[in-house]
Image (cartoon, rainbow, N blue to C red):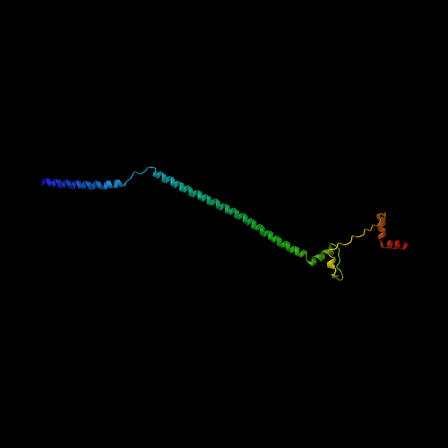
Length: 171
């Protein structure tokens, strides 16, 4: 029996050795050789991602700056339009005041020396006015009056009422 025991123990120890080496070999078989450049690649990717985010943030800031400057321009133009509309309204009011009949009458009497008519004259159209509307009026006949040689002093004398009456009596 000693030999059977030794053989059984040998088998057991061999089985134990196999079980001890088998899990280690199983772990080693799942392990692989890692490339040492993988962490460097991760760092490069991280740096590129951070750089991309920074570039995008700068682009957003530039776009916001452009939007703000364009909005300021739009505000200035809107203000100028409002001022122009206000001025146009004031000019319309002034035009209405200048075109009023009271203002026209006042300017005609003061500046032009016109006087209002005592009774208004109304024009009455005739039935033949429409037919004659397209006609050309006849040319006026030229009348030439010979100019007399007069000096300014004789013109002044002739225009006074007493001189005009005495010259008319002499004729």
